[in-house]
Image (cartoon, rainbow, N blue to C red; front, top):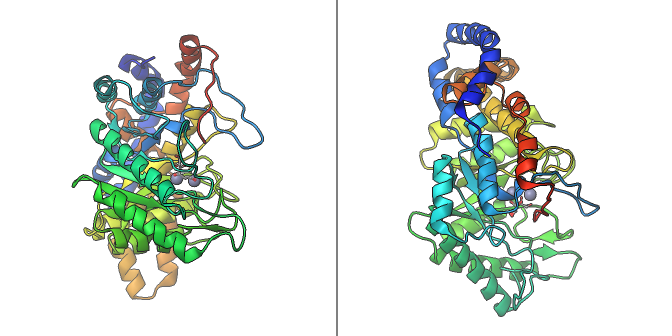
Length: 426
Ligand code: AOS
Ligand code: ZN
Ligand code: ZN
């Protein structure tokens, strides 16, 4: 299924008058405050977030999984689904593949399909947290950190294979997330596990093409519940430094212990030029992978405030690989992703409203109240008309969820693909 431009236009026409009123009012107010509305809209239009191939089907927990009909069952269909989201939001211009779940059969056909939908191949993800069919060695006791050299070699080779696959598609980065760790005190030697991991990552790093980067994701716990080898940003930062200039830390919003100051982590990594990628989601308890912005929208805004500051002031930090890493147990995955994209753009737009010069002056004056006023004034602004303006000017929908429903996308997918359901990896 493909959404035709004129159908999006038809749905937009119904909302056009009310949008125009809201937009005019907001842009008038913002301009009076000194904001450059056109520049903000341009930034929103340029901000593209990758959709991971595993987020397009219904997720689940170890207790069960409730399917959603019409889910994609092949890489082609996954890319088509990203195309649907992208045509409505104009924000999802990239896909992030997971190997071995998404190994292309015909590279040229896949590349053509993606470029026809204006979709790029973002970071490729390796998988050494599950045993693959016919694999010689098992990852039960770890992969890159394993005490067995044969297991480590198999995991290193897998990452090199993933780079090779990504390279054929035009990807420019490899994301490494390791489940390695231990479930009980005494099970592992912490020092050996970290040293093995560092050596293995260095071997993978040697196989990176010159224009590639390696993104090292950290996570405090799960699936291991006593220790995780790459448990926090400090460990990831240390490993990235040990590997070299093309290795960076990757922040996944769900991978912190409760109340961690994620915005400060982001800020310091950017200062050091070592923030390479970002996984968006939201959570209440752990790595819940809930819809972005559904639980802690103010925290998301504060994180974006640091990201915007860093993008403006830290030329030592590269462009970031943005990705949504969420799963959906009870929602239509495509609707959930549309909601996440909206929340990301909303937080970004609000952060762009912060006048960093005025904030800096207030900080130098130690005017604590004013500092807070500046942030909260931006946060309390309803920026949704800016988002609608940005995407509709690019051919997207003024209201993507409404358009998705009125175009009856899910039912068309069910008609096309049947009531099949596919187990996603996570
Ligand atoms: C796992 O918790 C991490 O968030 C990973 O980024 C991701 O979900 C996994 O690599 C999927 O392959
Ligand atoms: Zn992640
Ligand atoms: Zn995660």
